[in-house]
Image (cartoon, rainbow, N blue to C red; front, side):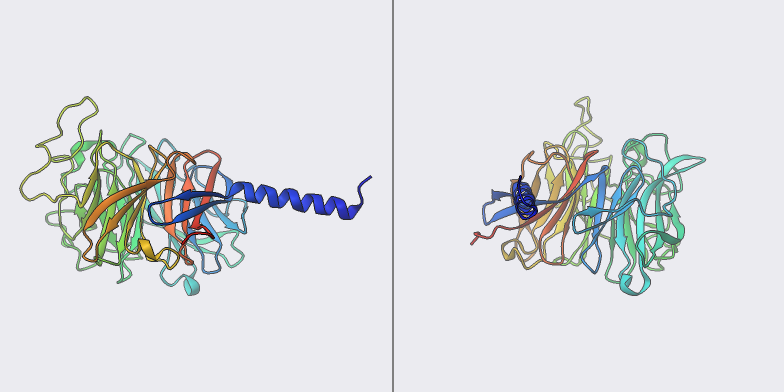
Amino acid sequence: MPTPEKKLLSALILTLAASAAQAEEFSTSQVKVKVDVVASGLEFPWAIEVLPDGAYLVTERPGSLRLVRDGKVSEPIVGMPEVAADGQGGLLDIALSPDFTTDRTIYMTAAISSDGGTGTGVIKARLAQDERSLTDVETIFRMKKGGNTSRHFGSRIAFGPDGTLYFTIGDRGDMTRGQDFMDHAAAVMRINTDGSVPSDNPFADGAKALPEIFSKGLRNAQGMVFDPLTSGIMTAEHGAQGGDEINLVKAGRNYGWATISYGKNYNGNKIGAGTEAEGLEQPAHYWDPSIAPGALAVYRGEMFPEWRDDIFTTSLKFGLISRLDRDAAGKIGEEERFLDAEYGRLRDIVVAPDGALLVTTDDPEGQILRISRAENAS
């Protein structure tokens, strides 16, 4: 019979072996990376945010918010309002208040039901000190007109340097809504953190467009960040059959959907006027065929100095990460792809405080992946 000491040693060896088996190494053009599975068992994780102490808040599309610390996934955090979890809808993005360490406030986007159908909304709440519940929960924005489809909610959030809140809304599966400026669909929105309209919004008076609209004509942007290189908002947008786009979004501009597109209708027909039209903005980059971008990050970490200011986009369609090289002026150059179909559909991507990349997998048994520099990387 093995002694208790030998049993403990055997268990430790098995644990270390299992941990080692989770880590895989992959070569990129500039550096070798290591991928660790740091948490699993999440149900369609849509977004991840890193708390000041290094733990993660993770949204699950069916409607739960969970805390992940040291690889352990918590029970659902109590106090989440009901969301419309159907198709692409549900609990979607999450962002911490810029003053989270003092106010413990979080912002979430979700599909919310109303009399007019289902639309994108923004929820504000406080995370309790024990991290088990939410308090002061309120919906600070509701889409003016919902829809009866279960797709194209957009829903990424980004804070501007002035503390205003930007978020995206898709065309709700109806391309005719893309050019209606009295419709929140197919747009980037900008509001204050109490839900009010900033006085310097491009349509703040509501005369030519709904006052919350910052820019229009974006089909279904599921990636958005504040870009430190260009000091502006950048989005990653789903096209139709082809025509996924990276756009540098500016106040009051029209990005064309569905008058122009680099994609085609699913029946193969041309969309609108083609790829260009007067007064409509061109993308900074587009993909054809589509990669189905799940999220967007600009790299400003210390772990990979080779990648400074490069753009990273996850792909739901191919299960890969796309890296777009940029020069000092922000011009996009060559694309590199890695992790091709190794972990399934990839959803969110964020740069962790230590410079690693955190990625969620879009799966009923979803995972959090940590991409770090391999120890033997030059």
